[in-house]
Structures are given as C-alpha cells and as structure tokens.
Length: 252
Image 1: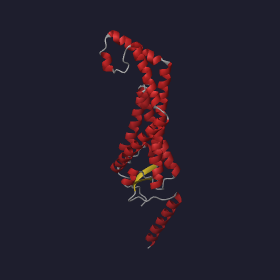
Image 2: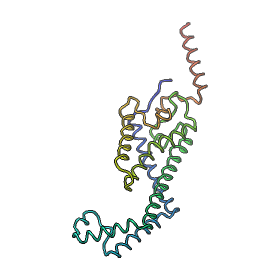
Image 3: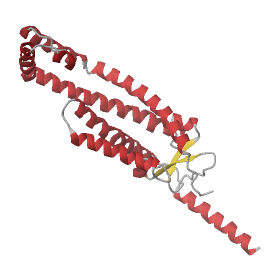
Image 4: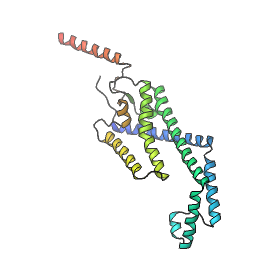
C-alpha cells in the first residue's frame, strides 16, 4: 500500500535511545583515542604546572573553589586575586589555555563526526533501508516521503547536515563556549531555541518529525507494513499497474 506507515513515536524514541547509548560509547572511545594521538594531556599538565608556579610564588592555592575563597581573610583574598590576575595574564597561560580549547574542539568535533559516520551512515548502508542498530531492533526504516528508498547521498546529507551539524554540533559548540566563558546570554538563547524547535517538531506536530528528517525530506516508517520502492520509476510503474487493475475491475 502507498499510504505512509509511519513508525510510532514510542518505537522511534526507544530506537533512538538505544542508538544514543551506542553512539555515546563510540564517541567516548574516539575521544580517548584522539586525545592520546594529539597529546592533549600535555597541555593540561602544562596549565597545572603554571598554576602551581604562581601559587607557590604568591604563597596561595589557586585551585580552591568559590566556597573556600569566601572563607579567606580580606588580606588572603587580596593575595589570591593578585596571584590569579598574574596567572591569567601570563602569555604562556593564555597560549596553553587557547591550545586546550582548540584541541578540545577538534577532539569533540571529530569524535562525534566519526561516530555519526559509523553508526548513522555506514551501518544503515550495510543494514539497508536507513536502519541503525536501534531501528533494526524495533523494525523501523527510513525512506523518502514519496516511498522511494533513501539514496546514499541523501542519507549522507541527513547524517552530516541534519544530525551532526544542526542537531548536535551547533548546540555542542555553543555549550563549550559558554563553559569556557566565551559566550553568554546569546549562546544560551540559541541553544534554547534549537531545543524548543526540535521539541515542537517532534512532540507538537502530528507526524512527530525531527529537524534532520525535515531537512532531508525523509520519514521513519514501520517496515512490517510499508512498501519501499527502489526508484521513482518503479513507484510510477506500480501506480500504473494498480490504476490499470482498478480500471479493469470497474469494467467488469
């Protein structure tokens, strides 16, 4: 039948949760591997060394938290602030800190990208019908909204542009910038807006369509009842055959 047999919301959420667990595991493994290859720990160690250097020079502990800072006397707090200012203005500290931030961006970006390419592009190419491990488990497939099988280029665009770039990396980049003190209210508003749009599209619309499916023109379907055609030509031939059969029945 040609009517879209959309997969149920709870089946899709269950499949997505299963995939997220696997994806997170792969991303963490990739991040650990990349951090080792890029020697990220050397920048962490260097920053710690510089922090200890200024702490010893001023006779304070620069690693104390906000609560511990409040307990210092006015004189001790003044010494702490002087040490912290000298530390923050050190060219080596600035360089090392910026290198850590850049390295973190590279590690996070490529870990997530490789994870998506492996689990959301390569695996569906092998399993067919746009299926990830979670979708395979719950009998869900991905196809174009016109019931035609998802071509490789569209699957790639759905994965890289929809899921990786818009669905993941824009919020992740903004969150990192907020955590590193490089972005304030604007970043928070953008993240909130993206999450709100995603929630509205998935929970507030009749078809529960996420951003990546909207962008790619794809739909999650129940493979047990959905017909998927190899090409538009095959779909057209099927429609002609059905039309001819119906016309023949009416003539009888």
